[in-house]
Image (cartoon, rainbow, N blue to C red; front, side):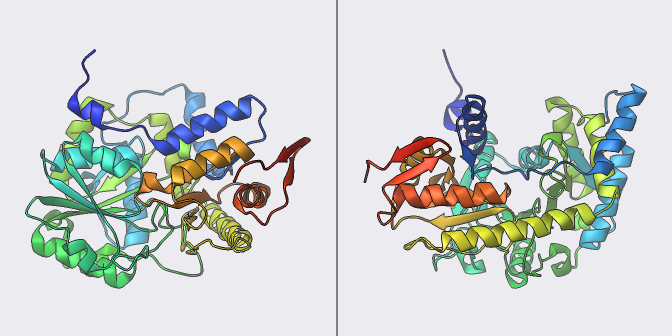
Length: 405
């Protein structure tokens, strides 16, 4: 069987594979704890469910326009004005089947083979693979000082004549880092000067802690949207805990949005009209839901940090937002994949190896589950790798004895 070069070069999504593994183990009755997940466990907003139910009861569930319904676009326009302070037109907006599709069709609209795309590392696992699917070359950018906070100099060192796009994800998956307003200002100004597209992946931008702020890129440009190469990506998956609804969007200049719409029309057509209806309900409904989720996540983060700090040798950077922490376990294991496998095999705790995000020796540990999962999960991790722990551990009625080093 012959497989294309692109097909052979694209790897499986580590995070989606982990979700599959969890589902299989859970179905078998295993006492598994998922600390690698990327979705809050609370229910979708009531406004989203009732709005969708109204359309479902009507039975009128038909094709949607390729770039989103009028009502969906109106909700996105309202959202953009409220959170970015910019009035945009319907032609500046495309609704997609998840923020990931919005990112993908944007890349397909602007990248030629061998174009380079710069993104901050550690990075979302799909960025390199999506870029490769478009024939582009992924260029991860690391902070020279070893932190999760790159400088403009770290970025510009990687820029070449082939650089077509820079992606900023703040707050960042997997680190939870929020990039400073100064850094965003410098990136916006640099991209405008060089004529480089700038994509702001803002999917977590309302899930932030400690009264911190996420910089608004529109604050640092004097250009109107039609003369700008700025692309804003967002969606309902994270802030409204609507991961399964798969509704995201992009805001950009009209010409780019038109090309993205043409591409999407041949890929999937318009996103589900029923799921758009739910997204509209969430965006236009009571926003106290998002604040409630944010407060819960901040509390979960604090509990996780407290428990992790009981383990000597860990290098911990407290996340500014999202629902992920990215912890350096290299004092215990240099090989993050081996460590993640050990924790799954021995104590049934799922984590994501840092190598998948471009940073060896780390694990991504999520705190979007229950407090019980967080505390028990960390206790199991500590028992599995900390030599000072007792030799025995009970998981339910099962007694484990640590017989490995």
